[in-house]
Picture 1 (cartoon, one colour):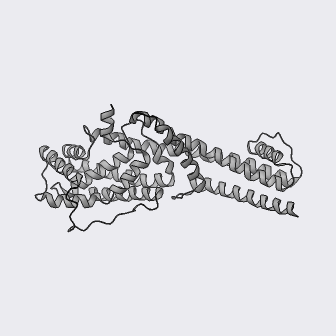
Picture 2 (cartoon, helix red, strand yellow):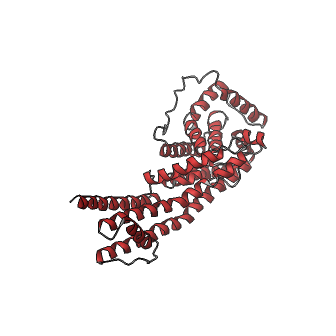
Picture 3 (cartoon, one colour):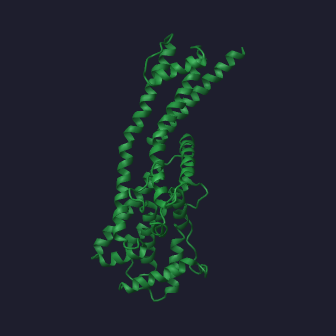
Length: 354
């Protein structure tokens, strides 16, 4: 009687493991919405811990970047291996529950069926059905991942194309101020509007791809000094400067791009951290920012650079600073979180190390 209870429990546990794993694969690559999958999170978190320990031996950012560049690909390759291992464990429990032999014999039958080796013969139609089902699941999981690899790398390529182009436009210091100066020199207003529309589409795609396929967030740029998080910060800072500080007619393309960027960064942050603020509320305009805010000096320095480049600024820079500070409050926390999460480069740090 006790043996029967154990076998029933083993059968039920095996079925639950199989269902959970198949659903994890479907939610990861088929379901078109952001889903947090426990099994995937365990895999990626465990691998991340190992890589973080290894990066401690890197003396420069470039060395640490080369190590972390392997994290996302290794995690992606490890994912189907774990899926197959759990599937194999689940079917092992089922075979043992159906009296197909000892645990070792059941595991050997499970591995043979999963990998379609055919080295073990089964007894009876029920076991045969389960072995064929296991072989089908094994092929299905591998095919599912392989079929989605091109989609992932296409999204990665589109993301990095914008990052590379932005680096050219925000040179030489790779800052929002340089980007605003470049936009001022770029030519017609229509050209600039097209540029902001392109960045708006980039943010919308970031929101969609980096929550439905979250491993994309950890794929690093081909060049150590680049990062999609840093690029997003430059675009949003430039938009905040134009809206708050530069004296120009209201541009709806800049405003909608800024809104798209805030939404995208906060929603990606929410996916990785439930306690992060999704869309921080705008600070009241009558609430002054901290007097000793270190970014105030950076803001004033940016104003001097913009004036030197021939841009006309708002007459009341104090009010401009308050508006700029309020706008940055909508995305700064999310960007800081994503920068730490993805180990984004600090341009000043890289310059010192090089």
